[in-house]
Image (cartoon, rainbow, N blue to C red; front, side, top):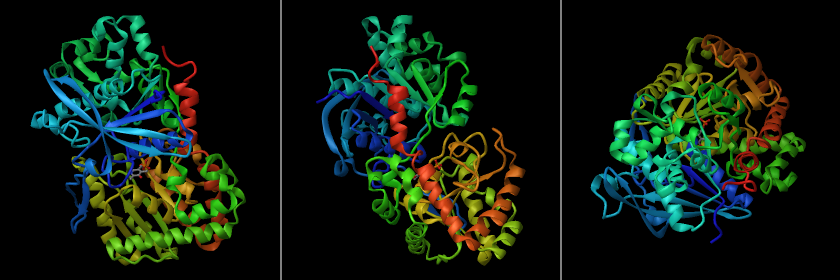
Length: 563
Ligand SMILES: *Cc1c(COP(=O)(O)O)cnc(C)c1O
């Protein structure tokens, strides 16, 4: 086996809707990264957890309250077993780990993804459940789970390959404990606590870290008492010796920052925000991207195949979508819209009108994403829709313990009831890879109203752009870069780093009423030009191929490499 150059670690990786190993954007991004690496023939392996119990299946009651159904899936049916066995010492006893593998095939190569699994008979019942539930359990469960990911990935890779990878890429802080294993390997006698400056430099040379959110709850913290109890004295001392536990609390982001040679945020604006949060570490930025072939709906893909067949091999060619005939783009979009309305009908028995301006919003339901912002003034919205009809399609899951997120879902349902026949609003259950694709391609405008500056990047608007669906979005995350007013879509509010919700609501309604709806209804060819520019200007850049190429050039730098 060729030794992998890059080992990519992520708590969630979304590969297949039947494998419920992801909760949202982070996992989808990791999946797109793996697919793009396989396309490029990059020698990369990925490691994640198997999450056997599955991220839940979503249901709503009559009031729109979310409930969660278990969604266990069977790795035995969808993955190949790996014969290597490893074990870790956690809480003073051995935790045994096996792994499953899925080979992700791309154009120029393939990438193995390993799923760590503690559900083996040698383990205690508690340990068997450690790779069961994504973002579940209490603090102790989370720390043990992150130990399985970080330390388990390191051990598995050493069991599979005699040579270490040149680079470990930590996709978010959940995998940060890996840095301690790297440090131990770089240290005399394998004792990370004894590491000096030279050993730390050797470890840092091997690690790259991507931080994904400015939201504080997204940065795991564990008390050092818990860390000592779970990881043992040696690793706990190493954390303290590194200065990663000020005030007796381990911050996983600080650990990853302190032991990585390259760190980045996931959009240019997020890089600036992250730099402000962590002033001690030089922060870079590599803007996220989505897998172009995977996220382009069939009717649009057929237009590209006719005019720019190279796009399947190289996303840069999407730039030349600017020459595609507008009528073909309109016809392809109408097909994608019909597929969405059909999906809505099958899921909800509601019949939406294909001639009506249809606005989409689908992302994790959590407070800062503000799915309900568009309902701030129902009278105004009703008036807009009376003059120029609108309909709205929503999707998105709230984490089972995110009551704020569940309240937002319920408020969207309440607004839908209040608006009644004046404006159709549907909320679809079960946001997953499949639904996301149908939605992003099938609506006419993609709405995004996060609270600034908390949207690090956002990727669903990129999926929409690839399909010729322009965004109407607050200027945060990727949209700061992707937005050209009236050309690729429309901004909401001003360009400042912190938003004003009152101004944003007014601006959202003004734009809908005076710009977007008139363009859609009165000047359909001018609207189609915006659609086409969204593909040519944004689809050609905000794709995973460009993103992975930027990681290779800026972060991995395999030629100079480590050691
Ligand atoms: C793309 C995607 C997301 C992320 O959307 P954001 O715009 O980044 O919030 C979440 N869930 C699913 C299923 C997706 O496909």
